[in-house]
Image (cartoon, rainbow, N blue to C red):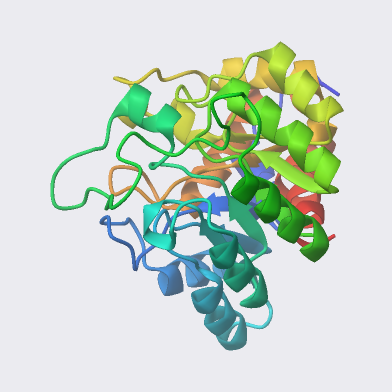
Length: 302
């Protein structure tokens, strides 16, 4: 899986591996938060660099509608839509899940900023760009007091399974994720991606990552975890991500950026740099291709 990297043309190799890649975790305007790039400009830049597609994620609403329009405008490029089950869509709301599926969402994310785990560790945010809360002031958890999945979660998992689309674990805690994964497996969900497992908010251990894989999940590692904006929250190195990938295996991992923040480069630039740094950490072109092209495509399309 790992090759000794003495290649001095890392930038050229990274640019080549970017072709056909899918960034499965991108934020773009329009959004309630200021974003680095508009979704239309994002697609134009990604196409120019040869990417095969992006998944648009919005913490407050679905993105299937804008994905539909962008796919009509650029039929040679794939934009995937998603929905995130935070307060603005009613939390873990089966009706929102059904609507998202019928409108073409390819990934359903469990709560992110509205998750109880997120609020406990990172709070609710502040300022005019803070995301809205209208219910569950203590945050949303998929499990009840007895440690079992709530009925609405089980219903949502059934909808995801029948639609055969991707489940994202959002900003749940590692222990909540394990319970969710077992429930998803029982419900027949075949496509599961543990959302940015190495982000300090999640900080999933290698042992838990391996268990997630045993339960049928893939593991996502996002470049945002390594950026300066995470310095006060637990920034990690690409070397640490590389160690985690080696422990699990590139065949079960996805590399994304989770970019779109105004303090970071564009998602396209971010993915290229992530690839370059993983090359510097000794990964082969074949393994990089699995993680940035084949695995996300198979999870999002089948």
